Length: 503
Image (cartoon, rainbow, N blue to C red; front, side):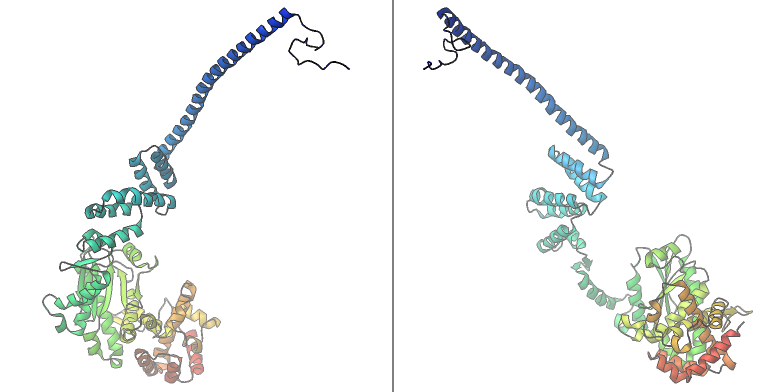
């Protein structure tokens, strides 16, 4: 059998067959030893060189990272004022760099630019809980100062909670009290609900007269003045009580552009004229003396059209309006067609005060008067002419409403009396966003009242006034109309023929 092969590299030739000379063997071992050590040395040196190069390269790489971060930081710094998001991201970078002052400033900047920036608010809440509040160390003065910071941070819930806590600790803390909407009166603080009761009690200490000794109307005048003294901003208010000549209380805003006293004098002349005309026609239907002594019709006169629209939300084209729930008129100083506007809205106010103000529930007041009646009376008074002495003559044909009313009746597109006399003011309001519908309804309402006064020499005048009494007694209705006028189908035929022939 062939001999087992010897281990390679131990005295064997590369082929593994012929024995090598001894000297050669020793030289080979020496070379292998030297070669191995040299190789190890080369590897170590190379590693060191590579490591040095790697360190340098690594440092270079790290340097590039820092350069990129710095570039981003500088970019955010340049954009930090432009938007809430940039301000927030810049604040984050500042916080990473331990620059708390800048971080705080720009977290606050973020919520200033966008009060609903959720991430910035969360960060500021944490900032308050972990840094700002603990730094106060329970000191009431410092915590009170913190209320201003919480306001800047848009953390209203936290601010309110802190204000409530501070008031419990220090009931005289005016800063916290005001945040909670409290008011001070005679040196004492009251909540909003408490203050309402305090004001009622304070009304009894009226200057120059004890509240309990005032007339019923005097108490209403006092309350209105008190309610509107600070309404619609801090502008100075001038009041004009038109009693006993007319049951009006006028308020005019102060302005460098006009004399408020002269404006009030002018408006007083208008409302007194309206009141006189109204009761010349309807005094037999109402207790005039009681009405004048006990009721107050309030009119607020704004400095300008812009102030009027901004303060009341009235449409841009409005010259004035009547608030059906408050029973008050809002108008501006230089409104065009002053007499027409005051006469129209003023009739609403007078009828409303006589009838609807007796209804305690505000939501029910607008449903007291039927639409055709209240708008018909208002538009009837709106159409007047002046006599040679400057007086007013009611009952003129309205060139504003006649064309529309005549077209509706002629084309058969009007509401028959059996339909329109069922319409309440609330029913009308549901479609009052349609200008064409509104004009049609106003025009037809005018034509109905004009017809009832003028047809056949005043054939239905007394019946209309009978119905009028129903409205004043909060009993205006379709049934009341049938009771007053009889056969409404026959009445409608006469009405249609009358309107078609109007000129």
